[in-house]
Image 1 (cartoon, rainbow, N blue to C red):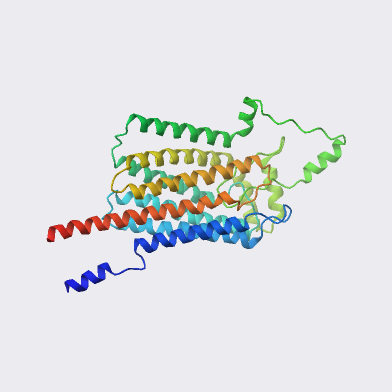
Image 2 (cartoon, one colour):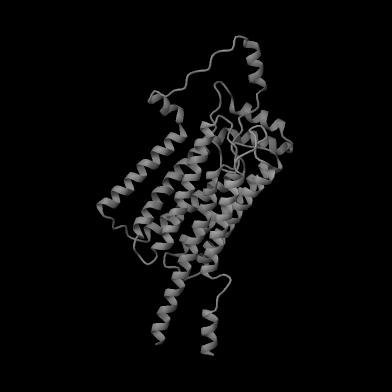
Amino acid sequence: MSSTSEKSSTSPSFLSAQTLVILGVVWAVLALLFFLLFSVPLSKEEGLPLWYSLGTYIFECGAYLGAALVCLRNWKSPQMVSGRNVWLGLGLGMLFYFLANVVFGVWELYFGLDPDISPADVFYVGSYVVLIWGMVLAVTSKRLNLEIWQWGLLGGIAIIGIAVASWVAAPDFFKSQFGFASTPAPQVATVATSDLKAAKAPALQASPNSKAQTSTPAAATDPEAEAEAQVEESNAPAWVKALDVQLTPYAYWVNLFYIVGDVFLLIIATALLLAFWGGRFSQSWRMIAAATFSLYIADMYFKWRDTQAEGDYQSGSLLEVFFVFSAILFGVGAVLEHDISTRSRQSRRGRRSA
């Protein structure tokens, strides 16, 4: 009986830590190759093909769903040293992000809308809330006995993160402060013709495959009028068009919440990295910190492109692969902690029986 149990415990399992980590690495490499090879459109007018957009959703949704499953597996296990509620927060954050991508994919690919805000943002906002909750629990579960240089590093990263987020949120304000304000375009002589073109111009295209967008509308342009013009051109049902127009006024505040949430997650991730540095579980929390950094990079890049591209930005750019990396790193961190926790518990039992 004992030899049989030893063989079963040492026999490789499909859900072993090594197998799951390898699957995550393969998924990340495939996603990177996919983005590298196909993220450049053949022409600016045609944009990216539908199959490419579907591929980006598949890679992102697959990564977030897998991360949610392994994080929730940690939550169900009583052996997690960092606490079950920590992994409940992280698991729900990954699950909400997966659901948000699915809803936004329907809104974008099926209804043909590129909304500033959509019902998917309910899940996106929820993902930030539970992610912050779970990571705060992880920090508070370990006393922060940081040295002076570590506190300085934490403060420096916080200042850099806030500065980058502020630049992304209000680029025109900082350009004017430093004398980089753009020169206004020359006025067209025929006022009636320019007015007619402005009235018929389509709405600025928001970048899909993300949360609410921070578009910079042209001067004297009503965001609600832009939303109405966009939805009228789509084939979406009437209730979808009405909902899209009704949600548009809340886009600014939702975007502001995302930017603040990104900075807060960046600070918590740095604190986690320093708190768990050198410990037995440092490897897993390094992955969690790297996952948060990847999410920050992807979000800041997207919002910067969205505010700088003047409506020409299309989803699926190369750096959006960091959304995939973020989910995979969350999952790898969960797998590593589960493996270390279960092995340490088994080694204690082995010593007691000996």
